[in-house]
Amino acid sequence: MPLSDQHAPGAVSLSALLSLLRPFFRRHRLRLLIGFSTLITVDILQLVTPRIIKHGIDALTTGTSQSYVAGLAWLLLLLAIISVALRFCWRYMIVGFSRILEHGIRCRIFDHLLRLDAPFFERRTVGVLMAHCTNDLAAIQLACGIGLVSATDAVVQSAAAIGFMAYIHPQLTLIAMLPMPILIIGTKFLSAKLHTRFTRVQEIFSEMTEFSRSSLISIRLLKAYTMEVAHTLRFDKLGKKYVRGNLRVATIHGLMFPLATLAGNLGMLLILWYGGRLVIEGAITLGDFVAFITYLYLLIWPMMAIGWVASLVQRGLTSLGRIHGLLASRPLFPEIEDDGLTLPGREIVIDDLTFSYPEAKTPALAAVSLTFSPGFYGLIGRTGSGKSTLCKLILRIYPVADGALFVDGRDMNSLPVTAVQRRIAYVSQEAMLFSDSIAANIALGREEATREEIIAVAKTAAVHDDIMALTEGYETRIGERGVRLSGGQRQRIALARALLCDRPILIIDDGLSAVDVDTEEQILAALTGHFQNRIVILVSNRLKTLAAAKEIIVFDEGRLVARGDHRAMSRQSHLYQAMAAKQQLAGSDYAAI
Image (cartoon, rainbow, N blue to C red):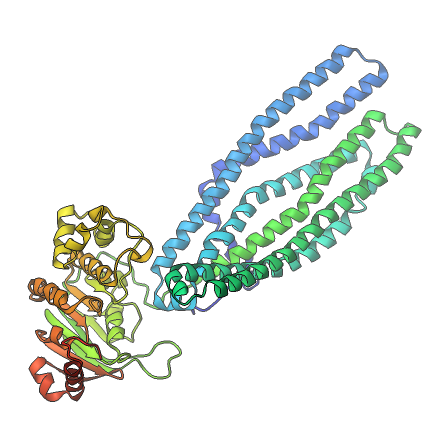
């Protein structure tokens, strides 16, 4: 299924949408049974109350003893107390279930997102994904909680109230129902409008969320360019757009409630006109008339609830359709069950590999063939020459054709993605850190690691002294994306994290670019022991750093143009010679090309 597919509720069957909810209803069926049983019991008690009132009024008009009337009053009080207890029960059971369902779907979304590949996240913004986990889930929770309660309440109360009304006087009941077609037709028309408008509101909310997120994580850049006012105006524009969308939705809500009230009040008017004549003529008693009016009042709430429930259900289905589209997205990698396979990670073979990014006019890599065995490899080349792309393909971030990538003699496409990634430690140029302690960031891949192990890899990455210079040492919380650290410190912490994983393949994709050359040499010297029994691939344009590499691989415009050790490259590769000359001219051993 293409990752760009956006499933709208109208494009997906209702059965497919409800399939997301069925497991939760099945798992918590006992809870729901108790909840709806108590809800229906409360409705029955409410429907019994007018009959008791009828007998009380008829008793007063006929001069029955006061003890009988007092008994009816005590009975009404008892029913009220029972109703209070049962109302608490159904709220706890049903509304509580809606929160359990919300939590379950949120966890499923989160788990699904973690399993998707890079192309998916290139097509969907974080704002859209956040909207799925906030507004969309809230709409589903309301529909499956108070929406279900109101729907059940409306059906039971309306059916039973109409039955009791018909028992009192069928013809009067028929007259009271005359305004109902107005409500039914109006609700159907307004619900269709609501779907379109609410979908647009959710889209605007996604845009606003994404704008807020990108602005906050780039706050230092915005301040540096004095863009605060401009971004405030843009956010204000989005906010007003969101308000206008919500006002259009509120217009539909504002029409649904008055429409239901109108239908109920018209019914009341007809009852007062026709029912009053029946009382005067003696066709029904005064108690019957009061009971009939009470039942009509009980019927007005279901009439009003029809519009509200229709609104909740429509919004819930719209959001469910958006989440269904997200969960229907699949990674482009072959879906192979992870059976815990452990690969030795002793050899990587690339055979005539050609790869293009989506919508790119030219391939990022063209006819590349390489073999990596344990040792230290350096990848160099101009910006955009394909170095980082090759690293990402080895890491299985993007899919490749069959027969192009092999690990330990097996086609990577025949292996679970996780089986390959478990054997690779990766350090990117942009070190990704979490808003947590330094120790927790280093131990990300091995949460059970001891403090001694964390300190050991930090020393190897030449960041231990920097950490100890902080007030709380390894327990220092580094802020969002490591904002409290320098670029070089972030990269070295990321390197320490990769070393702690102790995997047979280590890829450093320009992950030391923010580190000075002396520190980099110190790090590489400490890593010398790792080069003997691991495949270490280092992307860097600092030629002095790569001088000790087992093999230096030169890329240019997506093609492998030269390979060999430092001496061979100095004699054979024109690009390598040009880079060396430029760095020497700049008076530096590590200037980037």
